[in-house]
Length: 396
Image (cartoon, rainbow, N blue to C red):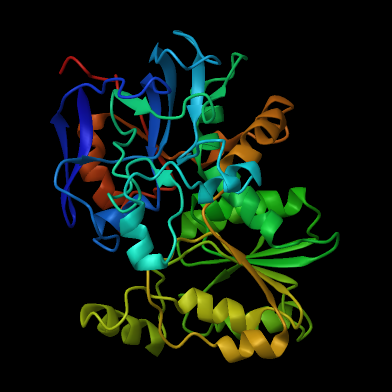
């Protein structure tokens, strides 16, 4: 089959590789019909996530048709159409039973690598380093799905792939971010980052009762998309714009009730702190660039909530934790507990409350993926979301 493979920092290639096989009676093989490049994939592309190996198949947002199932898989059969959650959960451990699926104790065969870095291991993830399981990803024509009794969501309607594909990650991630923000009716919510997760966080904040959402970014097409959802926008790249001052002005000096950091470890900043973080990362004195996290802690009102769906990988510097403590804020974060959200959000799509495909700007083939990684990283061609059809031009 063809697959998009990580070949080193800033190097991705589309290669012909071996088809996946059933390795466990709980596995399923999926013929991938749609997949996507996620903003989190750029952390791999840019070399921020360790334990990647040359030839690793990328991709954790995918869906398709069941091709083969192991003998212990009882809920799926050949021909079923499914969306696959990016987190892998066993369904039987302590954390799965608590519905903290992203903390599964049994799905990461390389748990010792995460334990060395983080103290404990979370669940395995598709296409996201050997530290997180070493599983082949879904930017391919076929994918092996472990614990298939637990993860995949069957799509039994005739909704097109593009309307349900993002149930694999970014729609539930944006929704959980809004849920973690503990939004009350009438609240003002600030969202940093108007990429795909940020867009779904904005939409979800309104679904959960926010009266106003303030969206912060610098990319014109992303800001326009946020405005189309009803958000007030702040372009932080403008010389006379201070995000903290703008948020105070928009909230009568109080600050937003909730702040959502939908950016994570590769945050940009036009201020001195942006240069500071780049230098510290280059000298390996810091692993992440947390300028958004700093701003969000400083901006949120006293007693407010900070939600962090943006991925962080390691060690941060100059985080104003004294401000967080002094204001008595609540912080909630983590990988998305996908299994809690996929079915309820599918029902919202089926009822016409939201069509997630509105964020798609580019539809490409597997062969085009390496170049589009660069486009996505550099925010060119008005890119907002890239979807891949693994079978387009397959013969070529």
